[in-house]
Amino acid sequence: MKSSRASRGARTATTMEMPVITICGQIGRAYSGLADVLLVKREGKGGGLSTLRILSTEFIDYEQIKKEVWFLRWLSHPNIIAFECAFSVDTDVYVLTPFYDLCSVLRVIQAHYKHGIPEKAVVQILKHVLLAVQYLHEQNIVHRSIRCSHILLSSNGAVKLAGLRHCAFLRRNEITEAHEPLHEFGPELAEGLLWLAPEILKQDLYGYGLLSDVYSIGITLCEMANGFPPFSDMERLQMLYEKSKGTTPRLLDSTTLQEDDAASEQKRRTFTDSFHNITNICLKPASEHRWPVARLLTHPFVRSMKKTRSFNDLLPHARPTAIRNVENPSNREAVNSATPVMWAF
Image 1 (cartoon, rainbow, N blue to C red):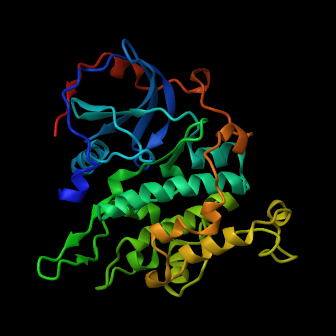
Image 2: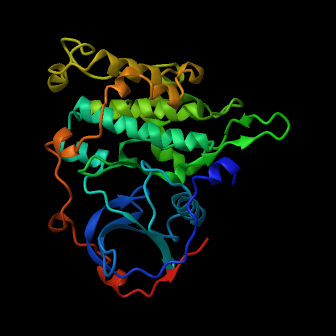
């Protein structure tokens, strides 16, 4: 899997001492609800808040866990979720990553912006996501799961792309030296059908490549702006049919909604032409008509962001997750009494 270009950005594995942690509470679920996500406090030197995910190999495929931890350790970019450590306890794997106090964009929408987040916040999030995806694409990695639940935010303006367990390498043809398209469609992709590009869903001989991520970015733009992902009101077969025939989602505002549409909140706003334009570019049904990520970074909509601002300014209704607001985890006693063993790769 290693390449000379990719290895320049890789982390070097180091031997770490076992962290001493105190559990503050549960802040969510991961892996389609199969894993607890806990807020923990690291004790001692360099202590602070972290996120702990408890992944049970009884319910989650071991190779999927191993793959995600490998990518977490290996990738290094300011806009990709960082890695602290991973260790195993019996049949569970514990993965520690930094804590981002606004959690995911999805959580911000569900809790504070049910009709979508402001356009200026979308610009900032999009630019940082594009930088993260550009880094992945330079390593010939397709993310395959870009969506609001996999974009993490901090109040200070930081944006981190997560969901690395879905990543896949493009393989190079030894004869032509060109990168061959992917044809993989594992069960782990099934939960993200709404965000997947038509060429992935077709599962034909042509396969899919880096530009499939651009389509997912377009769906995510609609999700951020509208408050929900396109096609979410459809049955699975209808959604697949609409994507296969080239139905293009849209941003909902005063310029796209009809008089008889019921979405009154959306009708009172008007997005910029450049926002509509970049969304349409990302959502072209044919992948060859989409812009690559490097070109998207030159789009006027992205270039309109001059500097990174605090999300306290951009998302004033969003409130950071505080220790006093988290739920008590059901497995607190089991975690605190465990004798962990470092998990090495």
